[in-house]
Length: 304
Image (cartoon, rainbow, N blue to C red):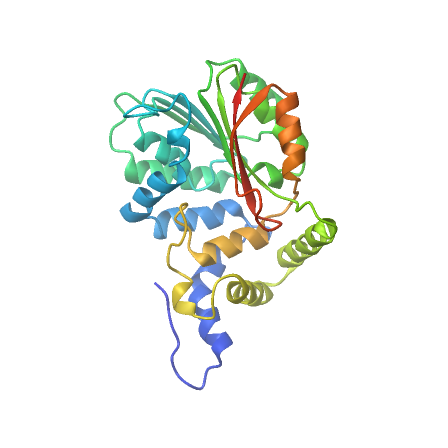
C-alpha cells in the first residue's frame, strides 16, 4: 500500500520518501547490502498481477516470436529453454505461457530463487506436460556450466541484464555461449558502453554512483532513489508505483534495481558483435543499439 502524506507541513521530499518506507525495510540483505533478490521477491509478492503477466508475455517476447524457427502458430511450444539469472521469474513464466516444455531457471541469489518460485506457484496452473526446474547457481561456476552443457540441446539460451553484474562479464559471456549448440537461439541483454569520446567517463561516473548507493545509509539511499526518479521519470510521485515496461516493473523497482546493480560492467556493441561472430554466431537482430550508456542492448543471435 502506498502511503501519501498530504499535510502541507511536510516538504515534498518527505511526501515522496514515505512512498518507499515499506520497501526500504526489506531492500537490504542481512549484511546491509542491496539485494536484487529481495527487490524481486517484493515485486513478485506484491506487484505482479495478471495484467503485468499478460503485458510481459506479449511485449517482452514479441520480437523473439518472429524469429526464424519460431514462425508457427505456437512458436515456443515444445521448446527447451534456459533462463540465466532468472531474477523475478517473469521471463521464465513467459516461456511457460508460450508452451515451452522444458525450462531451466537459475540465479546466484537465493531470494531470486524464492521470487521465481513465488511466480511459478501463483501463475503456473498446469504442470502435466512441463519440466520447470528452478535452482540456485552462478553462470561463473564451471561445474554447473559443465553439467548444463552435457544435457539436451537448449533451443533458447536467454539472459536478461545479468552477465554484467557477475563481476566477470567476459567469463559469464563465454560460459553462456558455451551452452549454445548448432541451431540454438541466443538472447542476451547487456549494458552498453557508448562508442564516443566520453564513453569511459560516463561509465566511471555511473560506477561511482552505484558504489555510493551500495555504501550509503538507508536514508541516503531513499534520497538517491527520489533524485533519480525525478531525473529519469517525473516529479509526480503518484506515477512511481505504476508498472511501466514490458518486464512489469514500476519506476521504483527499476531505479532501485539500477542503482543497486553492482558489480557493474559495460561493453561496446561492436565488441560484443565481433565476439559473437568469432564464436560462430549469426546475427538475427540487435535492439536498442543506439541508446544511452548503462542501458541494455539486446543481442539475438543463432549458433551456426
